[in-house]
Image (cartoon, rainbow, N blue to C red; front, side):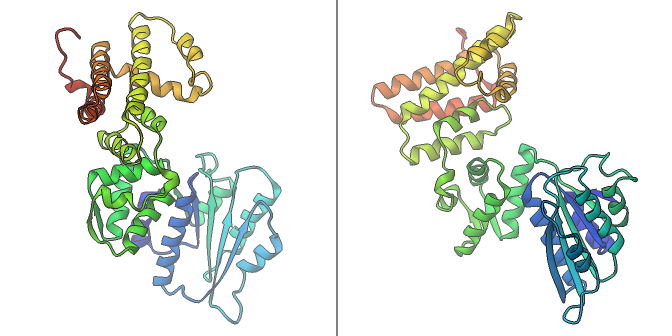
Length: 351
């Protein structure tokens, strides 16, 4: 049987324990988290006295694997075997390891196989993983979308009896850039500090690892990326200022990003090829994977909207040069907010 990862707990409560689980994900967090969920459920069903053995197909002793899947012996009632498969290949060792698990399944054995993401072909009825899934359960985890990260953080926070304000959620999300382990560890640190209930971004900031603080280049990427929320952009601005980043540095990165998008938008409006822009760009010529993000950002902003954003940053620059950092920061935040809601930008007659 096959299910998506978000259905695992529901499946366990409705169908009980299966003899074998395949946890398929490219994110190691899900291997550990799903494995813990399965083992805890097994313990609640009497799987309390067991021998535990862990194997990896990188260097596996097949005889020891087979012995571990057999009788648990005199000092335990059950056996828990975890097999890690770092890469899906056609090696003899992998085929034999999966064949051993299939052959040795018994009421005293709980087997968990951690793999990278599996295709439909990998889970076909005649394939080794498909045969195991037919006797147990294949649980597939896919990369989270931006809105799913927010839900993930808030759901995990509730598990620690915490309630985060939107800026706090954005701070954790931006600090760890999709590192699920780090996100959960931060929430755990907050909980272990004795905090419960409502938590603000300022309180969370104390628990963010120093090596995960932002740079102005992260903020430039955040301004360009059309999928990021206003909260993430504003949190990054506030964090950089608290860490002492000069306002002029932030303005410089904003200005460069907006100028790049304006040049792209102009080329699009004139139906001219974009490759010359990318190849001549100081960063994008070396990082082609970022080109799609820039292109989507330019497509989502009209030339008048971009001129308006550039005007805001120019006014912020002028404010700094007149020693008015308060006004400059207000204009920077207004630029980030307007970037997040381009359809609501109020254009002047000159735009």
